[in-house]
Length: 264
Image (cartoon, rainbow, N blue to C red; front, side):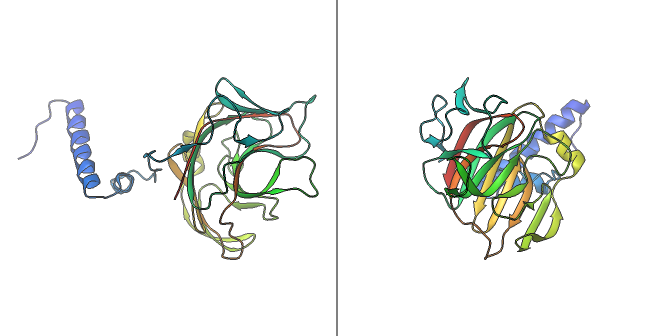
């Protein structure tokens, strides 16, 4: 029997209810809802919305459990606030380092916003550097770039090799496999320039999910998969500290909140 619809809204409601019922059934069968949504016409591969077993890394009140330059980092209105000025500059790139461990395989979630001047980053699978540095809080490793920009390639989300001598390891929109320290084979386009412009929230909070398992890294931005990278056996970093960056040079600020993680 063909259903009769008295208005476009009633037809839309019927479709939504049918789809919801279908997704619920798939969920009961153990099939990923995110997979089903993408298969049913949504080209966005989405981050898993489940948040159970996530550990909070920031209490929303203090910097307990973190180590950074107290002249540059503070808690303001319940969020981590890092800022440099002409009068109070950073001596090179400096970081607020989480002291809770060196996770290997994990899912890290947080939200950020920052000024349009300069850039910031989220370090993971990194290590502290003590020699040949300008300040006490320096790390090297993978970095999820943080920027307040919507023009490729200088946007938030690409992997930068902080002090690794590898530059930009994988760009936003790429599904790629490394073939050397500075070479990669790009196999798929995950997001276009125009799609990213619609996705990013300039001058506002943006949500990040980083999933690291073995040599594979995935970056999700405001719910959508924007980067999928597999490193070489030789160059892959398989564990290390988590940290937040203030970049040296031009005065800037960056803020972070809702920092949570679970090990996989």
